[in-house]
Image (cartoon, rainbow, N blue to C red):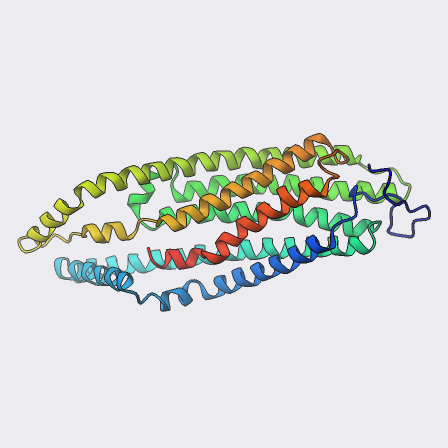
Length: 361
Protein backbone atom coordinates (compact mmCIF):
# COMPACT_ATOMS: atom_id res chain seq x y z
CA UNK A 1 0.00 0.00 0.00
CA UNK A 2 1.39 3.40 -1.01
CA UNK A 3 2.18 5.30 2.25
CA UNK A 4 1.69 8.61 0.44
CA UNK A 5 -2.02 7.94 -0.06
CA UNK A 6 -4.40 9.93 2.15
CA UNK A 7 -5.94 8.27 5.20
CA UNK A 8 -9.37 8.55 6.72
CA UNK A 9 -8.78 8.77 10.49
CA UNK A 10 -12.48 9.10 11.33
CA UNK A 11 -14.37 7.02 8.77
CA UNK A 12 -18.12 7.52 8.57
CA UNK A 13 -20.56 4.67 8.15
CA UNK A 14 -19.82 2.83 4.94
CA UNK A 15 -16.27 4.17 4.72
CA UNK A 16 -12.85 2.66 5.36
CA UNK A 17 -9.80 4.19 6.98
CA UNK A 18 -7.59 3.31 3.99
CA UNK A 19 -8.03 3.31 0.20
CA UNK A 20 -8.49 -0.37 -0.63
CA UNK A 21 -7.68 0.21 -4.29
CA UNK A 22 -4.13 1.19 -3.40
CA UNK A 23 -4.62 4.29 -5.57
CA UNK A 24 -7.27 6.87 -6.32
CA UNK A 25 -9.19 5.62 -9.38
CA UNK A 26 -8.78 7.66 -12.54
CA UNK A 27 -11.76 9.84 -13.38
CA UNK A 28 -11.01 9.88 -17.11
CA UNK A 29 -10.68 6.09 -17.30
CA UNK A 30 -13.88 5.59 -15.33
CA UNK A 31 -15.90 8.03 -17.42
CA UNK A 32 -14.56 6.76 -20.74
CA UNK A 33 -15.25 3.11 -19.93
CA UNK A 34 -18.70 3.88 -18.53
CA UNK A 35 -19.71 5.71 -21.71
CA UNK A 36 -18.11 3.26 -24.15
CA UNK A 37 -19.50 0.15 -22.48
CA UNK A 38 -22.88 1.89 -22.32
CA UNK A 39 -22.77 2.44 -26.09
CA UNK A 40 -21.70 -1.17 -26.67
CA UNK A 41 -24.53 -2.37 -24.40
CA UNK A 42 -27.12 -0.43 -26.41
CA UNK A 43 -25.66 -1.60 -29.74
CA UNK A 44 -25.72 -5.28 -28.78
CA UNK A 45 -29.23 -4.92 -27.39
CA UNK A 46 -30.41 -3.50 -30.71
CA UNK A 47 -28.60 -6.24 -32.63
CA UNK A 48 -30.38 -8.82 -30.50
CA UNK A 49 -33.78 -7.24 -30.92
CA UNK A 50 -33.37 -6.92 -34.68
CA UNK A 51 -32.06 -10.50 -34.78
CA UNK A 52 -30.06 -9.88 -37.96
CA UNK A 53 -33.16 -8.80 -39.94
CA UNK A 54 -31.74 -5.30 -40.27
CA UNK A 55 -28.70 -6.75 -42.00
CA UNK A 56 -30.69 -9.12 -44.20
CA UNK A 57 -32.62 -6.18 -45.63
CA UNK A 58 -29.30 -4.74 -46.79
CA UNK A 59 -28.22 -8.00 -48.36
CA UNK A 60 -28.76 -6.72 -51.87
CA UNK A 61 -25.29 -6.69 -53.37
CA UNK A 62 -24.30 -8.84 -56.39
CA UNK A 63 -22.71 -11.52 -54.22
CA UNK A 64 -25.73 -11.72 -51.94
CA UNK A 65 -28.10 -11.94 -54.91
CA UNK A 66 -26.01 -14.71 -56.42
CA UNK A 67 -26.16 -16.64 -53.15
CA UNK A 68 -29.92 -16.14 -52.93
CA UNK A 69 -30.22 -17.47 -56.49
CA UNK A 70 -28.30 -20.58 -55.45
CA UNK A 71 -30.74 -21.09 -52.56
CA UNK A 72 -33.75 -20.70 -54.82
CA UNK A 73 -32.37 -23.10 -57.44
CA UNK A 74 -31.49 -25.65 -54.77
CA UNK A 75 -34.99 -25.54 -53.29
CA UNK A 76 -36.54 -25.75 -56.76
CA UNK A 77 -34.42 -28.80 -57.59
CA UNK A 78 -35.47 -30.47 -54.36
CA UNK A 79 -39.14 -29.78 -55.06
CA UNK A 80 -38.96 -31.11 -58.63
CA UNK A 81 -36.88 -34.21 -57.85
CA UNK A 82 -38.73 -35.45 -54.76
CA UNK A 83 -42.27 -35.95 -53.65
CA UNK A 84 -44.27 -33.02 -52.37
CA UNK A 85 -43.89 -34.28 -48.81
CA UNK A 86 -40.13 -34.65 -49.11
CA UNK A 87 -39.78 -31.24 -50.73
CA UNK A 88 -41.85 -29.62 -48.01
CA UNK A 89 -39.75 -31.41 -45.40
CA UNK A 90 -36.53 -30.04 -46.90
CA UNK A 91 -37.89 -26.51 -46.91
CA UNK A 92 -39.21 -26.87 -43.36
CA UNK A 93 -35.80 -28.16 -42.24
CA UNK A 94 -34.13 -25.10 -43.71
CA UNK A 95 -36.60 -22.84 -41.91
CA UNK A 96 -35.95 -24.60 -38.60
CA UNK A 97 -32.22 -24.09 -39.08
CA UNK A 98 -32.76 -20.38 -39.70
CA UNK A 99 -34.96 -20.08 -36.60
CA UNK A 100 -32.29 -21.82 -34.54
CA UNK A 101 -29.64 -19.45 -35.88
CA UNK A 102 -31.84 -16.46 -35.04
CA UNK A 103 -32.32 -17.67 -31.47
CA UNK A 104 -28.56 -18.21 -31.08
CA UNK A 105 -27.83 -14.71 -32.39
CA UNK A 106 -30.31 -13.18 -29.95
CA UNK A 107 -28.79 -14.98 -26.98
CA UNK A 108 -25.28 -14.09 -28.13
CA UNK A 109 -26.16 -10.38 -28.35
CA UNK A 110 -28.01 -10.35 -25.04
CA UNK A 111 -25.05 -11.98 -23.28
CA UNK A 112 -22.74 -9.29 -24.65
CA UNK A 113 -25.26 -6.57 -23.81
CA UNK A 114 -25.70 -7.68 -20.21
CA UNK A 115 -21.94 -8.08 -19.79
CA UNK A 116 -21.42 -4.53 -21.10
CA UNK A 117 -24.08 -3.27 -18.69
CA UNK A 118 -22.20 -4.85 -15.80
CA UNK A 119 -18.95 -3.28 -17.01
CA UNK A 120 -20.60 0.16 -17.33
CA UNK A 121 -22.03 -0.07 -13.81
CA UNK A 122 -18.67 -1.19 -12.45
CA UNK A 123 -16.81 1.73 -13.99
CA UNK A 124 -19.54 4.14 -12.86
CA UNK A 125 -18.75 3.09 -9.29
CA UNK A 126 -15.07 3.72 -9.96
CA UNK A 127 -16.07 7.25 -10.95
CA UNK A 128 -17.85 7.54 -7.63
CA UNK A 129 -14.72 6.25 -5.90
CA UNK A 130 -12.69 9.02 -7.51
CA UNK A 131 -14.69 11.58 -5.52
CA UNK A 132 -14.58 9.49 -2.35
CA UNK A 133 -12.09 6.59 -2.52
CA UNK A 134 -12.97 5.50 1.02
CA UNK A 135 -16.49 4.34 0.12
CA UNK A 136 -16.62 0.62 0.76
CA UNK A 137 -19.77 -0.23 -1.21
CA UNK A 138 -18.45 1.54 -4.31
CA UNK A 139 -15.28 -0.55 -4.16
CA UNK A 140 -17.18 -3.80 -3.61
CA UNK A 141 -19.67 -3.19 -6.43
CA UNK A 142 -17.09 -2.13 -9.01
CA UNK A 143 -14.94 -5.11 -8.08
CA UNK A 144 -17.83 -7.55 -8.38
CA UNK A 145 -19.14 -6.15 -11.69
CA UNK A 146 -15.80 -5.83 -13.48
CA UNK A 147 -14.44 -9.19 -12.32
CA UNK A 148 -17.57 -11.20 -13.18
CA UNK A 149 -18.75 -9.52 -16.42
CA UNK A 150 -16.19 -11.21 -18.75
CA UNK A 151 -17.65 -14.61 -17.87
CA UNK A 152 -20.67 -13.56 -19.95
CA UNK A 153 -18.38 -12.61 -22.80
CA UNK A 154 -16.74 -16.05 -22.79
CA UNK A 155 -20.20 -17.65 -22.80
CA UNK A 156 -21.10 -15.55 -25.84
CA UNK A 157 -17.92 -16.62 -27.63
CA UNK A 158 -18.69 -20.30 -26.96
CA UNK A 159 -22.18 -19.82 -28.36
CA UNK A 160 -20.80 -17.89 -31.34
CA UNK A 161 -18.62 -20.79 -32.47
CA UNK A 162 -21.49 -23.26 -31.96
CA UNK A 163 -23.71 -21.03 -34.11
CA UNK A 164 -21.13 -20.94 -36.89
CA UNK A 165 -20.60 -24.69 -37.09
CA UNK A 166 -24.34 -25.35 -36.80
CA UNK A 167 -25.00 -23.60 -40.12
CA UNK A 168 -24.01 -26.71 -42.08
CA UNK A 169 -23.20 -30.39 -41.33
CA UNK A 170 -19.97 -30.06 -43.33
CA UNK A 171 -18.68 -27.51 -40.82
CA UNK A 172 -19.60 -29.76 -37.90
CA UNK A 173 -17.34 -32.46 -39.29
CA UNK A 174 -14.42 -30.01 -39.22
CA UNK A 175 -14.82 -29.22 -35.53
CA UNK A 176 -13.66 -31.67 -32.82
CA UNK A 177 -16.88 -30.99 -30.90
CA UNK A 178 -20.40 -30.77 -32.28
CA UNK A 179 -22.49 -27.67 -31.52
CA UNK A 180 -24.58 -29.35 -28.82
CA UNK A 181 -21.57 -30.86 -27.07
CA UNK A 182 -19.72 -27.57 -27.41
CA UNK A 183 -22.51 -25.58 -25.80
CA UNK A 184 -23.24 -28.16 -23.10
CA UNK A 185 -19.59 -28.59 -22.10
CA UNK A 186 -18.64 -24.94 -21.96
CA UNK A 187 -21.94 -23.73 -20.49
CA UNK A 188 -21.38 -26.13 -17.59
CA UNK A 189 -17.80 -24.90 -17.33
CA UNK A 190 -18.91 -21.27 -17.42
CA UNK A 191 -21.55 -21.94 -14.76
CA UNK A 192 -18.93 -23.44 -12.46
CA UNK A 193 -16.48 -20.59 -12.98
CA UNK A 194 -19.06 -17.85 -12.55
CA UNK A 195 -20.35 -19.41 -9.31
CA UNK A 196 -16.81 -19.55 -7.96
CA UNK A 197 -15.98 -16.02 -9.04
CA UNK A 198 -19.26 -14.54 -7.79
CA UNK A 199 -18.83 -16.34 -4.46
CA UNK A 200 -15.22 -15.22 -4.14
CA UNK A 201 -16.00 -11.60 -5.06
CA UNK A 202 -19.04 -11.49 -2.78
CA UNK A 203 -17.20 -13.02 0.18
CA UNK A 204 -14.33 -10.61 -0.39
CA UNK A 205 -16.79 -7.72 -0.19
CA UNK A 206 -18.38 -9.10 2.98
CA UNK A 207 -14.95 -9.53 4.58
CA UNK A 208 -13.93 -5.98 3.75
CA UNK A 209 -17.25 -4.67 5.07
CA UNK A 210 -16.91 -6.55 8.36
CA UNK A 211 -13.33 -5.35 8.80
CA UNK A 212 -14.46 -1.77 8.18
CA UNK A 213 -17.05 -2.20 10.96
CA UNK A 214 -14.39 -3.62 13.29
CA UNK A 215 -16.03 -7.04 13.23
CA UNK A 216 -14.60 -10.47 12.55
CA UNK A 217 -15.48 -11.57 8.99
CA UNK A 218 -16.79 -15.11 8.40
CA UNK A 219 -13.95 -15.52 5.92
CA UNK A 220 -10.75 -13.53 5.63
CA UNK A 221 -10.19 -11.39 2.53
CA UNK A 222 -7.32 -13.66 1.54
CA UNK A 223 -9.48 -16.79 1.82
CA UNK A 224 -12.17 -15.13 -0.31
CA UNK A 225 -9.48 -14.18 -2.80
CA UNK A 226 -8.39 -17.82 -2.94
CA UNK A 227 -11.91 -18.83 -3.99
CA UNK A 228 -11.85 -16.15 -6.66
CA UNK A 229 -8.43 -17.37 -7.79
CA UNK A 230 -9.75 -20.92 -8.16
CA UNK A 231 -12.62 -19.60 -10.30
CA UNK A 232 -10.24 -17.64 -12.51
CA UNK A 233 -7.95 -20.67 -12.82
CA UNK A 234 -10.90 -22.81 -13.92
CA UNK A 235 -11.99 -20.16 -16.41
CA UNK A 236 -8.45 -19.97 -17.83
CA UNK A 237 -8.27 -23.74 -18.18
CA UNK A 238 -11.62 -24.13 -19.93
CA UNK A 239 -10.96 -21.17 -22.19
CA UNK A 240 -7.61 -22.68 -23.16
CA UNK A 241 -9.42 -25.87 -24.15
CA UNK A 242 -11.87 -23.80 -26.19
CA UNK A 243 -9.04 -22.00 -27.99
CA UNK A 244 -7.52 -25.37 -28.92
CA UNK A 245 -10.88 -26.53 -30.32
CA UNK A 246 -11.25 -23.28 -32.24
CA UNK A 247 -7.70 -23.53 -33.62
CA UNK A 248 -8.31 -27.10 -34.84
CA UNK A 249 -11.55 -25.99 -36.52
CA UNK A 250 -9.83 -23.10 -38.32
CA UNK A 251 -6.95 -25.35 -39.37
CA UNK A 252 -9.30 -28.00 -40.78
CA UNK A 253 -11.34 -25.33 -42.52
CA UNK A 254 -8.31 -23.72 -44.15
CA UNK A 255 -7.02 -27.10 -45.28
CA UNK A 256 -10.38 -28.00 -46.82
CA UNK A 257 -10.56 -24.65 -48.58
CA UNK A 258 -7.22 -25.38 -50.22
CA UNK A 259 -8.40 -28.80 -51.36
CA UNK A 260 -11.73 -27.43 -52.56
CA UNK A 261 -10.07 -24.66 -54.54
CA UNK A 262 -8.11 -27.20 -56.56
CA UNK A 263 -11.21 -29.29 -57.34
CA UNK A 264 -13.94 -26.65 -57.57
CA UNK A 265 -13.76 -26.00 -61.33
CA UNK A 266 -13.87 -29.68 -62.26
CA UNK A 267 -16.63 -30.39 -59.75
CA UNK A 268 -18.80 -27.58 -61.12
CA UNK A 269 -18.34 -28.81 -64.68
CA UNK A 270 -19.34 -32.37 -63.76
CA UNK A 271 -22.39 -31.20 -61.80
CA UNK A 272 -23.56 -29.01 -64.66
CA UNK A 273 -23.18 -31.92 -67.07
CA UNK A 274 -25.04 -34.37 -64.82
CA UNK A 275 -27.88 -31.95 -64.10
CA UNK A 276 -29.50 -32.71 -67.46
CA UNK A 277 -29.32 -36.51 -67.06
CA UNK A 278 -30.31 -37.16 -63.44
CA UNK A 279 -33.12 -36.17 -61.12
CA UNK A 280 -31.01 -36.47 -57.98
CA UNK A 281 -30.81 -33.01 -56.43
CA UNK A 282 -27.26 -31.78 -56.21
CA UNK A 283 -25.94 -28.69 -54.59
CA UNK A 284 -23.44 -26.70 -56.59
CA UNK A 285 -19.93 -25.92 -55.46
CA UNK A 286 -21.02 -22.33 -55.01
CA UNK A 287 -23.87 -23.51 -52.79
CA UNK A 288 -21.50 -25.62 -50.70
CA UNK A 289 -19.11 -22.73 -50.26
CA UNK A 290 -21.94 -20.44 -49.29
CA UNK A 291 -22.29 -21.93 -45.82
CA UNK A 292 -18.65 -21.63 -44.87
CA UNK A 293 -17.83 -18.91 -42.35
CA UNK A 294 -16.00 -16.00 -43.88
CA UNK A 295 -12.58 -14.89 -42.78
CA UNK A 296 -13.86 -11.67 -41.24
CA UNK A 297 -16.11 -13.61 -38.87
CA UNK A 298 -13.32 -16.00 -37.89
CA UNK A 299 -10.88 -13.11 -37.43
CA UNK A 300 -13.38 -11.31 -35.21
CA UNK A 301 -13.79 -14.36 -33.01
CA UNK A 302 -10.03 -14.89 -32.87
CA UNK A 303 -9.33 -11.28 -31.83
CA UNK A 304 -12.11 -11.26 -29.23
CA UNK A 305 -10.98 -14.60 -27.78
CA UNK A 306 -7.34 -13.49 -27.58
CA UNK A 307 -8.09 -10.33 -25.63
CA UNK A 308 -10.50 -12.03 -23.24
CA UNK A 309 -7.86 -14.69 -22.68
CA UNK A 310 -5.21 -12.02 -22.06
CA UNK A 311 -7.46 -10.32 -19.51
CA UNK A 312 -8.23 -13.62 -17.74
CA UNK A 313 -4.55 -14.49 -17.42
CA UNK A 314 -3.87 -11.03 -15.96
CA UNK A 315 -6.65 -11.40 -13.40
CA UNK A 316 -5.39 -14.84 -12.45
CA UNK A 317 -1.85 -13.57 -11.97
CA UNK A 318 -3.14 -10.62 -9.95
CA UNK A 319 -5.23 -12.86 -7.69
CA UNK A 320 -2.31 -15.25 -7.14
CA UNK A 321 -0.04 -12.39 -6.08
CA UNK A 322 -2.61 -11.14 -3.55
CA UNK A 323 -5.12 -8.34 -3.09
CA UNK A 324 -2.52 -5.80 -2.00
CA UNK A 325 0.25 -6.81 -4.39
CA UNK A 326 2.03 -4.39 -6.71
CA UNK A 327 0.00 -5.68 -9.66
CA UNK A 328 -3.33 -5.24 -7.86
CA UNK A 329 -2.55 -1.75 -6.59
CA UNK A 330 -1.18 -0.28 -9.83
CA UNK A 331 -3.89 1.28 -11.99
CA UNK A 332 -1.62 1.14 -15.02
CA UNK A 333 -1.86 -2.66 -15.00
CA UNK A 334 -5.62 -2.41 -14.53
CA UNK A 335 -6.05 -0.02 -17.46
CA UNK A 336 -3.75 -1.90 -19.83
CA UNK A 337 -4.64 -5.51 -18.98
CA UNK A 338 -8.23 -5.30 -17.74
CA UNK A 339 -10.02 -2.33 -19.28
CA UNK A 340 -8.32 -2.19 -22.69
CA UNK A 341 -8.52 -5.92 -23.60
CA UNK A 342 -12.20 -6.16 -22.66
CA UNK A 343 -13.00 -3.00 -24.62
CA UNK A 344 -11.30 -4.41 -27.73
CA UNK A 345 -12.99 -7.81 -27.29
CA UNK A 346 -16.46 -6.24 -27.28
CA UNK A 347 -15.62 -3.55 -29.84
CA UNK A 348 -14.88 -6.07 -32.60
CA UNK A 349 -18.31 -7.71 -32.11
CA UNK A 350 -19.91 -4.26 -32.24
CA UNK A 351 -18.40 -3.35 -35.61
CA UNK A 352 -18.74 -6.92 -36.95
CA UNK A 353 -22.07 -8.16 -35.54
CA UNK A 354 -22.59 -11.90 -35.52
CA UNK A 355 -26.08 -11.54 -37.03
CA UNK A 356 -24.65 -9.61 -39.97
CA UNK A 357 -22.16 -12.29 -40.89
CA UNK A 358 -24.47 -15.24 -40.17
CA UNK A 359 -27.13 -13.71 -42.42
CA UNK A 360 -24.62 -13.88 -45.29
CA UNK A 361 -23.65 -17.53 -44.78
